[in-house]
Length: 311
Image (cartoon, rainbow, N blue to C red; front, side):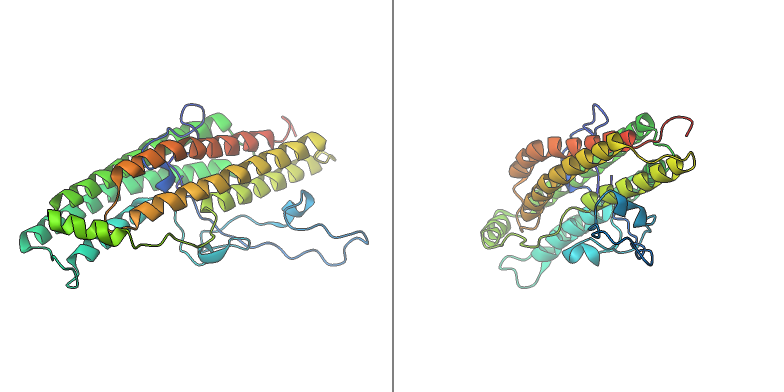
């Protein structure tokens, strides 16, 4: 989902999962943001619970669409909201074109090549603008459903499928444009790009996927909703709810870490002057199922935190 999401699609697309489509792992995850409330004055005499524990969840407020929230690490904290993949794809294409167009290149672009590349970039931008707008509208419906009083898992699964289809189309537009770009280059230019690619170091930042923080924040909102709903009837969440939350959160974090590694490997390929497209496709086949499982587990866990009917 852009929830970073996702083509990236979130649920295996055949389940509540986004279909594994090329470059699933590239699409963005919804980076929302918010701030935790301060602990209430006073407090019990017992030991304080650390952040992330069951009872601590009620201290979190609804996320806001800003640049980051408490708990987000590294560069993710200062990045602007990233919901859909269009801007990321266009930025990658633009950076590749700028590298080859630089006057410092041994074999520069000819006037004809420049015209072809400029036309390619503009056409790709125009196609992605339309798709990204459709994607964003679907993502907003998904977000609203995820924080509603009760989660309709079936409905969210359907939205997830639609988002995956749109983001998969965006990914295809991106890959096609990248392939067309590389076909415009002359053999000497390609060799220069391949040679320069051997010297590009991998990204060494330790920033978990924004999807992890999005999922964690929504889970905290769901727990807050559950507590408030049961409190109105004089009840509290029982152990079954606590186990469902803890089990789901553990699986989501585990899958999120694996997803992050896959995202890093994909970006390492895309940041090189000459992109190994077959290698990128092979990597997607490995990362796609992880992406799908992440969102499938997320939706399943949301459903387990619905308050009892009638409460």
